Image (tube, rainbow, N blue to C red; front, side, top):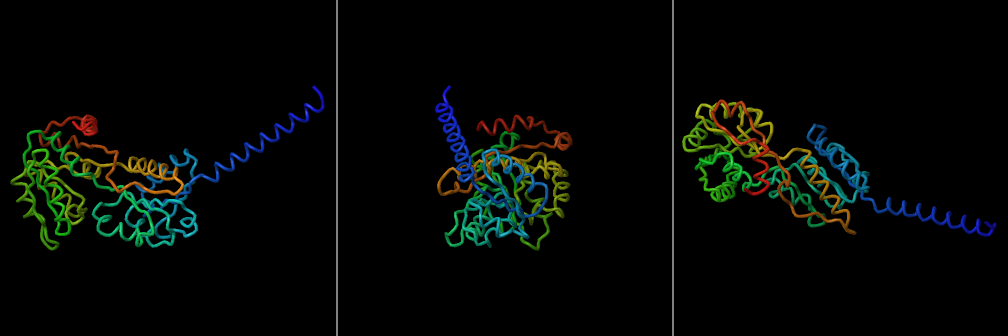
Length: 314
């Protein structure tokens, strides 16, 4: 091989190396930057962050983590998207100067609709969306019909603040031939009287994320009363299932994190990132308390079977 040929090959190799390096720099330049704001360092929030970090990292994007108490303007200022985990984190993100789109997750739909969307949008200067912590009532009603095929009436307790939810719950359950029996509980009222009134006319008690009704001070008393009336409770979290609900429909932090990561990756593929419309969780789980089922003498399909039928719409 001649010296000229070797020189030509050498020049070609150098050009190829330059192109590879430039391609690498280009890939880094277009990688998205996402800042995750956590309400605190508790396990559910950390789990969502870890899922998002891994999935976005695999897609070539950068992820930074900050906390609501110290959101860090530097990290938020360079973010193309902000993921706020929990209401406290969303409130912190709303107060920052960054106008990057904000996705709020693990937040109640009622909070987002009433105040969260307006605060985060900042007069329309910021694109915002949410993945609610709640499950859609249509899905809740479908689960009730699958788990309790002989039921005809479903009871619910609502605080005065959440009373309007009855207008959404009733038609969802009516579509499954389930009549809603409801009681509204004023802020200063005791729960026992309206609870017993609901249980006397119901085959099942539906728990909704209403902190005035279900909280650490009231849950045990509610479950003891439902046991006495032999009425099962359908809850909204795995912790409620452990505490005494017969079954619950909920989305785990990992499932919320997965959906959030999918949305963020999709948004970062566009020249100007934009988020989908707010919605309920796409991924969900059913948990069953076998001990409560035995105590009440109720035979339920397995949790996996209920999930499969819910996903299939059957």
